[in-house]
Length: 382
Ligand code: GMT
Image (tube, rainbow, N blue to C red; front, top):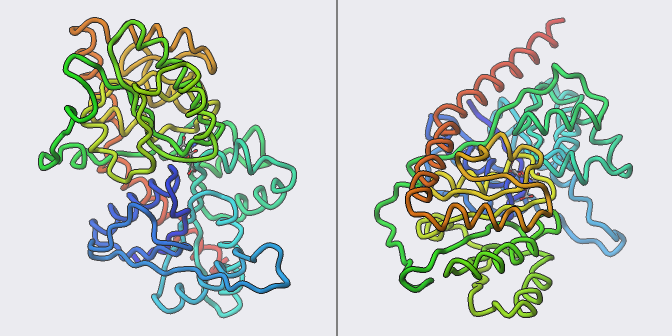
């Protein structure tokens, strides 16, 4: 199949899922064309069947805001025609589903009927998309998509609650993990560089947006390190970085906390991690937690959104209510202070993550694509 993919190329779950899915599809023989404003951070251009087309938005002094959707939909039209694309898959509704719809309409004028699959990822529904400034356009473009997928049942329910969308419209296809990537034995695990012997390593990975509550990560760690010799690895970057660093200093734990910045080699960090913290306000799935779990890292997360579908309470880690730093810290300490319990949680974290193995999830997308194509054909005949 010739597939066009639109996503955000930056560090962020939706871009990572789109990229990993594209690579998995290319490995199964599909031709996958990424159309984004920059090469996605995890895109491996050496995989056969992967192509990248950059969306350029020329600046013009009249524009206060550059018309990205216009440039994107025009680029989509060109790429779809030139490479005989059979299906367009857009990740994150805003503004990709809308730009996809515009491209579809332009192509229809020329007798080309391109099916659109839209994958909802989280904040496109729960935070940004729900804002009155965007809601009508988001509702419209979801309803105009031929197939809509959401990354968790929780996100599906949020979409049905917040938008005027039919229940049958949305199929849940959870995020996935490639087990082989966690088994790269060539990686030298440099634990000794990060912590002293006998110290535990706690890790947090995110894009440091307020929704991630990174200050809760620091507060939870502050309590853990009083009981358990430990270090904290903060991976990622974003608007909450300054406040997180300030809090680290004010709690007097800056020597125990390392801010590593963005990384697309997170397996090199997860290989020496002992516990993962994800105390988000909202989280439609929690891909970062799944990536930790496949590396046998138990997760302490908030009990919100799709996280209970990923992190099984008392099995792969624990769930606490959003903002309950006390509970998160005491659950973390309960896992880390007993070696047998710790080893049991590590084993179970991986067992739980294996339920989301790529080979089980990617065929669900292929089925969704075939359904979208046959629906489009039927619509033309009708
Ligand atoms: O919030 C982020 O980390 C980025 C965001 C995105 O769309 O780039 O992530 C969302 O999509 C991920 C992939 O499907 C999910 O794993 C995250 O849970 C989701 N984030 C939120 O819902 C806050």
